[in-house]
Length: 100
Image 1 (cartoon, rainbow, N blue to C red):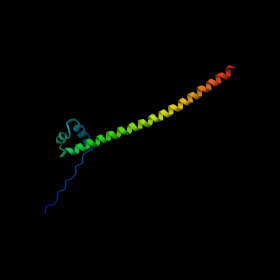
Image 2: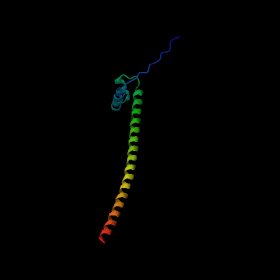
Image 3: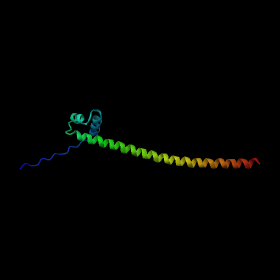
Image 4: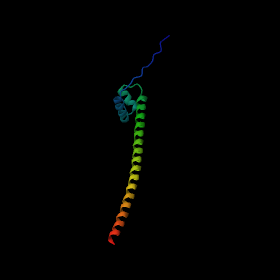
């Protein structure tokens, strides 16, 4: 009986993956795989999909942070407007009192 040969999984550095993703975006996954000596274009395609998902997740988090910051600033502005209104009323009250 023949021994079953196992394929060892090749690992790539994050820098290599990043360059491969950029190349795939420019010339396509199949051509990038051929140029880089990767046996399957599906590997690069998976990296590209994962990269897009990370970009979307990052953008979503940034949008949520901006919404939270906007909400906080609106609340702060509302509070400041109330304080200004109180101070205007107080100034008007004290000005009337001194004029008599």
